[in-house]
Image (cartoon, rainbow, N blue to C red; front, side, top):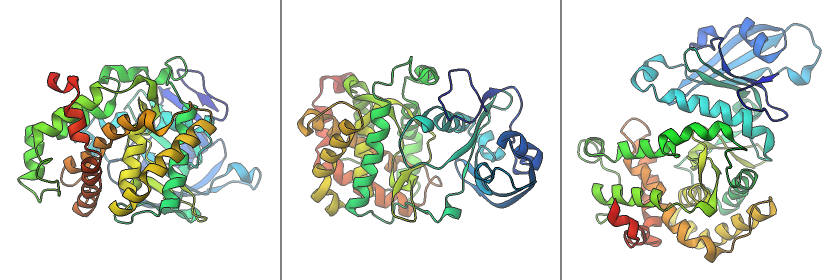
Length: 378
């Protein structure tokens, strides 16, 4: 079952832009609703756990009438979407991220060869603007989740860049005719993250983060609001169109899972958009490892990514072809230093800021951006 405003790929499951309302509270996740979206007669729905953060994850156990078609009867699922009414009332723009994640699992998940949770249903509605995904409960499958405080070994990072390469290769060019559901991003400048980062680096949020709370450990030369703001604007203004594909947008180690056999995958697909592939790569690599390990292995990891990109059907690049852009997009990690208090723990913010600030210093990212003609225009 699949219905959407644009052609659905083989394997897509769900209904996008439905005129029928989706659940917006955990209590509305009933056996009747589950029966409808899963296409199987659900006997009982038991909410095991509710996890409310930027998005809500409702962990549910299901039982069914009869025993037939067991392969299409998930018994432990995670229903992810907008179930925190108080948060959505404060930040209504979050609804966009829930819909975007449903769009990713509907349009992209079926066409890529990646380690992803199985999506049993993807839905968006035109009533409340809800977006949700019924997906496998990874915890119940024995998976662990990446944490900023636990740096990864290089071999796991290598497997991570292979995941990104496979995704980028399949979506290379991000042509509107191939991905028409991304067309609405133009109203946000083409990059939905720009607005969020621009807001966080504006004077008032900056003062809250750096003057009213414990400031993240930015080196003094970098800890300058106006300098960081102009650097981000310059990075966005000089994006290389030859490196365009659909990107994750928030590919940090905290948005990953690791299967029982050690294979990593990316989750939290709430911000995919047409962008520069190296944003994902630089952001992931510079934040996933201890600083010393990153310095030792970074070039080899980037070369490995480029090889995997080409082997997955993407273009062929050498390291020198893209290193300028990699250095520029290393700036993206400094968004961790702008994280508003309460969005992440200070422990996570501080360790990630330290890693990314070291990469920005190593690559002379600020100096590179400030040397570009576009910098004077920001």
